[in-house]
Amino acid sequence: MTYDPLVTSLLIGLSALNLLLLGAVIFMLRRTRRAVMRRMKADRSKHRRFSLGRSIWPQTESLIALYRILDGRAEFPSTRVMAVSPDFMLHVVKHIRRFAPKKIVECGGGTSTIVMAHMLKAFGQDAHIYVIENHEPSIEEIGEQLRQRDLERFVTLIAAPLIEKRYDGFTTVFNWYDLRSAAIPSDIDLLIVDGPLSLVNACARYPAGPELLPRLARNAHIFVDDANRADERRMIDLWRELYPDLVIRKLPAEKGCVELFLPAREVGNAFASAQS
Ligand SMILES: C[S@@+](CC[C@H](N)C(=O)[O-])C[C@H]1O[C@@H](n2cnc3c(N)ncnc32)[C@H](O)[C@@H]1O
Image (cartoon, rainbow, N blue to C red; front, side):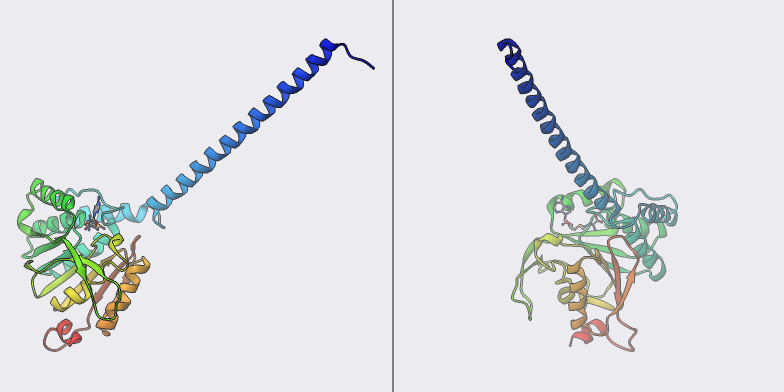
């Protein structure tokens, strides 16, 4: 059977067009699939970032509780992500309300500083917050936030750049605050550990143990933020080697909250004597 050359050319042309269309459809399908996969991946990581393992509700409830405790006399900067989460802050605020610590030291300031300063003002508590901070924009920001809220008198902002530090038993170097010329009280009642930034080196916040625990008052408490992280868990284990009696209380919080203290002792500074 023979075909008219025109029909043959037409058939070949149509086949080529079909192939071209098929190729275009395959190309578009693959591109759409890639876009959908990218979107799903972004959504998953966004969900992880914002849910941080638990629902938003505990954070909302904690935030409402914080505002209620402060009886409408407070306005907080943003919480979560880099800043403390409301659930962690609620544990700290309840502790301050119950134990009325006079000297509060915080490593890594921000929203947490403002919330505590509001608390001291609202309750007329005779206490002072010393914030140790290395990140200059954060120092500026905290200063500005305090000024706007008329809270400056409750806080001493200690600008302390990070310097290299070495500790017995470690081959690695730590980058931690230079406190050589800082006026840190020697009888701290409450220590909040939320800095420096975890990325500066492994177990970045470990130095707070050897550097600040000997400065704690006998009945002092420590609150560790981000305690769900492996580095913070290791840090607490290492502090326990320095202070074997350290009591560890895990409190519910999306990023993890651990409260530490020594059992009551009869005399002397238990933190100082535990190390000697
Ligand atoms: C977890 S943040 C401290 C959060 C603080 N307690 C609060 O409630 O806002 C730890 C440290 O990260 C550092 N930091 C904060 N924002 C930063 C930024 N945008 N870039 C680099 N470092 C930052 C600061 O030095 C801060 O002390």
